[in-house]
Image (tube, rainbow, N blue to C red; front, side):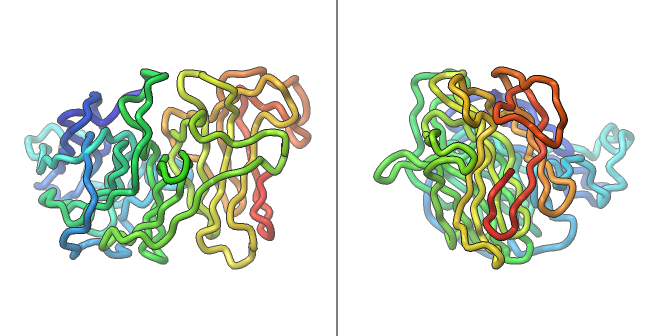
Amino acid sequence: MKSLGDRVSARARAALSARKSFSVLAVTAVSAAGLTAVAASGPAGAATAAHSTLARAGPSNDEATISQDDLRTGWDPNEPALTPAAVKGGSFGQIFSTAVNGSVYGQPLVVGKTLIATTENNWVYGLDATTGAVLWKTALGTPYHITTCPDLVPNIGVTSTPAYDRSSGIVYVLALVHETSWQWHLFGLNASTGAISYKRRLVGHPANDKNLTFRPLLQNQRPGLLLMNGWVYAAFASYCDHGSYAGYVGGFNVGSATSTAKTTLWTDEADVSNEKGGIWQSGGGIMSDGSGRMFVTSGNGISPAPGPGNKPPGELAESVIRLTVNNTTGALR
């Protein structure tokens, strides 16, 4: 797994890689074409809110989710001038470089004129997307110092790409935080100020297998978040295939009026003893092709036997999985 570097530059959402405890976020754009092609980051962090002027629930060209849209196409119709000729023409280059605290694995978001980046040291930054100036920064809590797996070091905090809700101006970030114990918490932050307005942890058993217990330190949360119908969804795999992990999709009710549930949890390894089936997706986001539908891809484990897709077994490793949402309870199936 690669972070977005010690000194990383973004060229129209293409990132390089590196792995350091402190790093620099660098952004490039085609200034001559009038573009703001932004995407890149690196490691570093600290908590406090600074000046807050720019971020607003902005225009339709916000980069509000990983890979541009819920279909994860990566296509931005608002950048018709970003052509191979423009990239080669000499105007495409770095426009700023900003130090942040901690490795950055998630894709930065762009909200209005603010670039939002998250780090493995559990810092969230709001940067001026033109100058790179730090508008605000917020610490979410103590990250987990991992010593058992070299895939992602030295700390585990925020790994996945956040999701931005244009209707509320809130950006949702999932972080591994220690309070009384290590737990995955979803945070909602005001994109203009960095102030935390929502916080909830994911605990308990998946609805489709009450014998399994979600164990945060075994579950790597890599795929980008999905915001759909007032819920934020996250998927989980493992660290180095260590421990008795399973693939999970968890959901947080951040604004659904039709559901009384606060969270929901589903596993792709229901009613089996061997488990695994982690949902990695190389950091790609949970995909949705319409309201109440989502798709994930599971990894290593025991593949299900051939059979009809409308009657899947409980064990779904090495599978492409379509889930539907119960709009009353929020449960996945």
